[in-house]
Length: 158
Image (cartoon, rainbow, N blue to C red; front, side, top):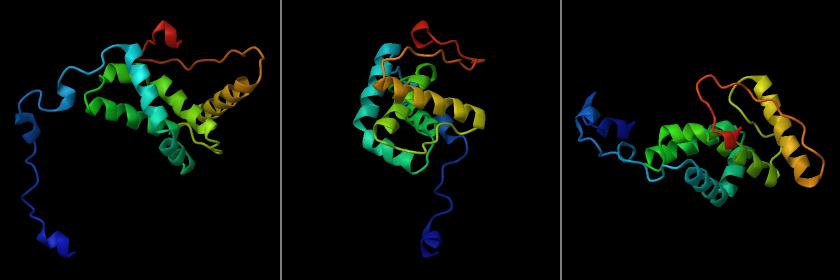
């Protein structure tokens, strides 16, 4: 309570103040550090691999893989590493890598998505399939894709 009394109520920014700053002062307002899709996917792969233990701890704590993926991608955007377009295009790659990290680290009962039980079940089946194929030499069954209304994926991601 004492800290709140000491806080100056008028020290907060004025609404709209950020709109008066010079263009390019934020990292995401400048050209991205990585503009190529393959380079961005490689950057995210390296970033996630370096932080595998932290990701596994978050998954064990019950944080959905989708939430972690969105956070990692948004962080890369706000730091000026990638554009929102590239983040959207590599989101599935990042999500699947996070799931793979969880499987490799032995996380059980992992949550995959933030919504809809049906989607959660499909992700669980896909993760189990990935783990089974990592150990077996059987041909892969076909996996149906959920249609994306707004985004057309490049051929290498289909």
